[in-house]
Amino acid sequence: MKNLRLLKKLVFVLSAAVLPVLAPAQEKPRPSPAQTAAGKIGDASVTIQYSSPAVKGRTIFGGLEPYDKVWRAGANEATTVETDKSLKVAGKSLPAGKYGFFLVPKASGKWTVIFNSVWNQWGAYKYDQAKDVLRVEAEPKRGGMTERLEYQVTAKGIVFRWADVELLVPVN
Image 1 (tube, rainbow, N blue to C red):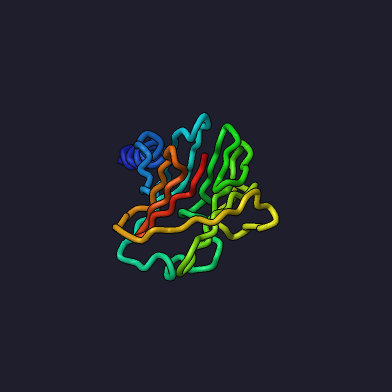
Image 2 (tube, rainbow, N blue to C red):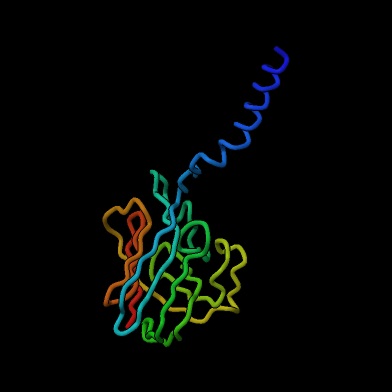
């Protein structure tokens, strides 16, 4: 009887140690999943990596994301833009490379678009304006609803959509 109890305990301990290793990992999906948008602008290959939050009935601009404050242009890690060739962004030169991509939303008028040399950072908490490579302005359009933040690379440039805002950053 004593050996049977000892055997049961041994089986329990081994099961507790081995089963988690054998069972497939069950990761919870991130509320703002990682996304990639890629395409060609002229001869350049452009890739945008970002996390895509949802509106979920919230006021986004002027609420969750305040006006006149640098924002990571996504969720979690800072959004990145990478190009293998130099580009003209709103008429200004951007060398080939990988950049942190930030926006400054405005209540009215043009938004500030920022390409920063520090691309591997969490959010915009350590954003340093002195490391900006390029700043331009772009005019947002208000219109239809986009539940999840999304980017698109088109022949005309980088398109950002979220909530009721669409912003084309002209690139050639």
